[in-house]
Length: 345
Ligand SMILES: Nc1ncnc2c1ncn2[C@@H]1O[C@H](COP(=O)(O)OP(=O)(O)OP(=O)(O)O)[C@@H](O)[C@H]1O
Ligand SMILES: [Mg+2]
Image 1 (spheres, rainbow, N blue to C red):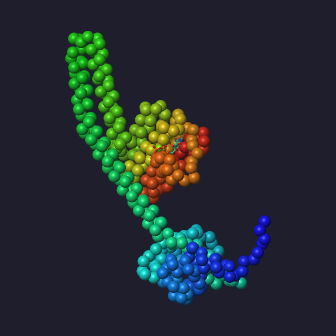
Image 2: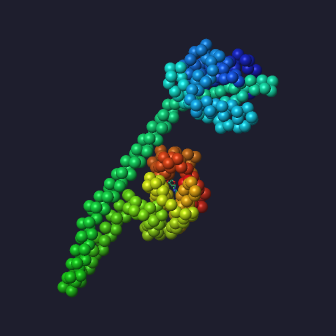
Image 3: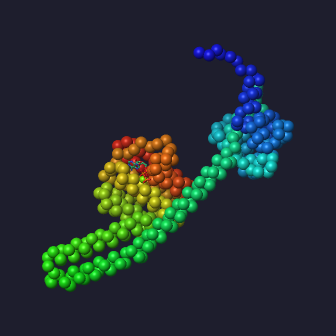
């Protein structure tokens, strides 16, 4: 066990001066009383320039002044504020940056004398995040365009010859039937069936890439189609339920909801071992809630969905990114043995 010792004010001063986070104190008028080296670096002002300077020289936009006022009045009336919060600020060289900061009142003899702050510059981090988001958005858009193009080609170029082949085979089969030997007749019939299946597969493929039903008829018929397809392809009985009065949504939003339901159903097909699934679409006054649920084995959710990405699992993370694009909210719930439900608000 170490010996206990008292830290002197000098020690605390050292900590303050050398902390890598910016720290400063200002009085009730907003005039800076003390600041550490990291704050000098953050703002570009020297210590001498900072002392006595008004904080409004750093918080130049109306938005940041409003935030500062709100923080101040909440702290003065003893209310909680969300900490840390983000604040835009202007450096000495005129550049603006974003800092993540925490604020608390300086109380001396029971009276608030000023405010102290700890902050860190997050401009680059924010920029990086925004660039990343933009990048994801562009890729998603490019992917959708590509899918649409391939679906169109399958539909317009690969399907017609197959359809023609079916018609010809059918014609040959019915015209020549009496004259054909049994094996030939069966062979012809087999060819016909095979071609019909090939066309069916091609159409399903095109529908999955970009369902015409979504573009032509909208989200609900598309959801019905997905549910039917799930039952047909793997025997999981899926139900679509609509709550509230249906209305049409912007095409981008419909496509996004469709893609999310599609990924959720793909996951159910591949991972859940469920026998039933439910798709619920609820139309609220100013929001739409999509919920996809199954009664399968469920799974252990990682702490962050992003953690799945490094394992090459992109489905849920992709859902989350898409949802962010329309400023929605995605909730995924799972209890082992009780299936999984993803809810998009
Ligand atoms: N309905 C479900 N039931 C049980 N487990 C699920 C369900 N949905 C997802 N999971 C689990 O969550 C993991 C992550 O899903 P995610 O969609 O992100 O990746 P993936 O399906 O494995 O791969 P990808 O979607 O990229 O092809 C899955 O590997 C699976 O273990
Ligand atoms: Mg998946």
